[in-house]
Length: 68
Length: 128
Image 1: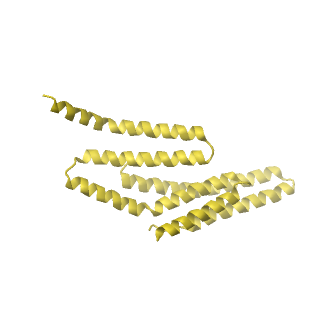
Image 2: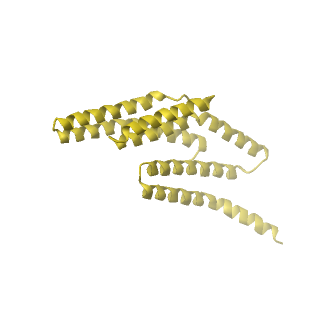
């Protein structure tokens, strides 16, 4: 088993929940645009993590199926 | 007992994704993609072992390597196209998913052309 690293899933979920709560707080405080900026920042961070994972997936698939 | 771990992991990821869906659907999509990829990566060793066995059996039955390598390539393209299409469909983009599937089919067809030619040549060889 390669090992199911649950840690990545919890990290993404944690960032997501944290960002959504902070965005709600900012909206309450009337700072709409900052909430939007915060969401975009969170999306970029999680996307970077995801891209590492996807590139690892593609590299493994390339070696197994000798595709490219 | 890996299946129990995988199902447990999938349920946790699904629950977290549903939690995130109302406020930030973006993160729920990220979670879906990440969970799917992690599960596939965890099964990669088994997949490699099965493909290795397949290759050895084919070599023992002295099937020309060109057929098997094309088969493996087709398998890889099919899996990647399927992965991309389901991710796009999960994100609600049916049109993009359809186009990815179309691209996958087309690329597989292109890879299969040499095989078709070989089969045709063999058949024509039989006719006196």
